Image 1 (cartoon, rainbow, N blue to C red):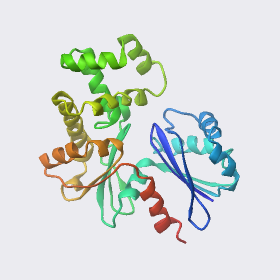
Image 2 (image 1 turned 45 degrees about the horizontal axis):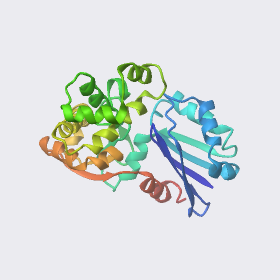
Image 3 (image 1 turned 90 degrees about the horizontal axis):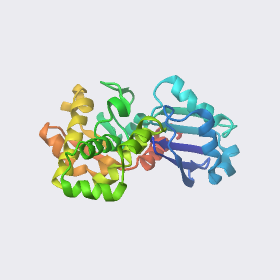
Image 4 (image 1 turned 180 degrees about the horizontal axis):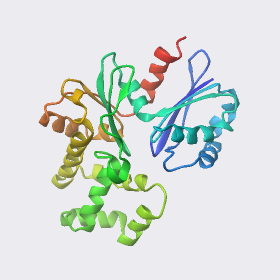
Length: 285
């Protein structure tokens, strides 16, 4: 059996295929970003999934694509978390950006962007992934992402730049104090996911002019810092993966039009397309 997984910082989508490449079942685990979780914790989380545990010894190939899985030592963290679980499997771990490229590949080179809990962008020619700028993650980068919008929202609230009616609504929703915020951001793990959790408020109030401007400026920051540094962006289709891209498609297209750029496909969840790509190009032999 074959396991194919797409993992963000928050959640992992798993598809299990039989040896004849028919789908057996789907399941989910938490996200396994090696910047935020170590190998023993990955193994412990996998043990919680009863569906996977039952067939884990039957898995012979694992294709795992995850946020944070860029450098070899980070890939190794994930592999070490899987070794005792998938005891008979060949483990292939790579970056979620490659999964995004596979998921939106239509036979022509393109710019590929991820907008979810975090963000990233690259140029994919069908074979090689080329990043013009490195991913700077949630503290220094992640423009256009859920955690970036969460940060902007929190900054506006605590610096009293949010309209009063929205500030009142925010307070009634979260009852958040600066001390609780600081503990969650600076002391507890998974600060990126914590910040991204506030993007729910952004989405629920996306028709408010203040929130529309927040989303627009976050997306403009993304284009300026992650898309435009790719010189190919001027003459290539720009495709998007992720829930944030899905929810704010209209704003993404408006920002892109302002830069005279062409937006192509926007796919909320890449797992279906990722599985199809593997069947067509990787597992067909």
